[in-house]
Length: 480
Image (cartoon, rainbow, N blue to C red; front, side, top):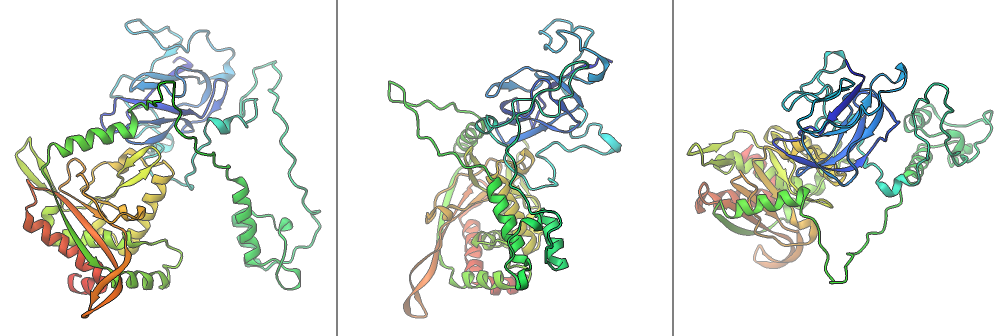
């Protein structure tokens, strides 16, 4: 087999045809390992990191950052046997269409075949490797540095094995770390504090003690860890305003998430006959219930918001009105009612509007639902939502209340029968028990496909959501 191998851009979703190279995470001469992230690619659905299907040394990158690349096009070449002497010259260039590849280059499998390390492909130990961005991450996700951050990196390649007889690459000296106290300094700290410091990676010798008799307390360790994290975070760049040319216009390419959003909303708006209904409710009791929930044991550290109540209300209302959770199958001439609920949450990101969904949300407990919503929103903000998380939605909530908006007339995601707009909750005058009092009031907006949902079903469904938000505890007792 050839030692020089090429890797094609894989299909990162269902039927996607192209992707934009956002950032190369390696460069020619870098030594990479199997499943090491090598490139960040943005498709019409998400930005994902692609892992390396081979281990070896990068010989060539065929496309630059910002290039649009068709699925199935070679993007990188490797020398998989860097210790076997000089690599064959010219072996890394992608073969021209219609020409036979040289004997020195192994061309990737034809379309439809699966690369090692991809979903369904071979992986070490007989396990199925998970494409980065599809499966659960083992560490907290962090956005990789962009081009501006790359300027501060050392000029020499990191982790590159120098060829035989060649001098190792020079690496600029790093800034000296602040001096620590001598190792024989006695540090006073209780065993639980030492254990916490070890878990957080905090050197107790560098912590200023504030406890009794000069001892280091738990709060001292947490403060030192927080300070170290803040120091490690990159300084956010100031957002630049639009750049206008001599014609005083700016042209923005329509691509990626924004292109897909435009296509989906236009198709939905002119295919499904939309009807929107509104309901204004007194959510004061609901907000009190949420406050009590936050103070309950086991919930103190979990971030919860009114969106959790709205999501639970939708799930319970779908159980009472299953037709809401369905789709119109024009080809088969059928209405497909779903027993499972993949609950979508519309999320605004710098790349545009995306709608990831919580799979089978109807089977989750309230706490599991809260954790799933937190993870979904956090992943979306970090730009790490996978294509799999944005497929198969059955009902969507768009939380316009976070922007201070009362409500709206949302457009249905393609294939869904209804979508709920959850407006802001604000104090307003409200007639309560015969008197005008300040109450926590919100307005709900429900858009639905009139081919599936008629006015009666839509009204009953929306009224059930309103009843839950008005008094969640009573609704849970009544509906189970």
